[in-house]
Image (cartoon, rainbow, N blue to C red; front, top):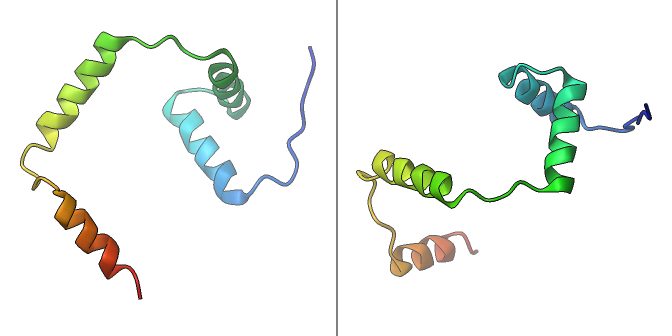
Length: 81
């Protein structure tokens, strides 16, 4: 099987990859292969699953204040000097 060496990987990227691999119960190599395969092959979109995720997110954030265009404009303007 072919192999690949990744050079000059930033430490923070390596740490994030290791953490992601741990969360998915994979080796670092296995996690990188899964990421590459997903990006290059693409995953078919499951509209129903996406809508369920959106609904759960809306439920969890329902108590947050609703952002208006005016609020976003004011926040953007405050960031300018």
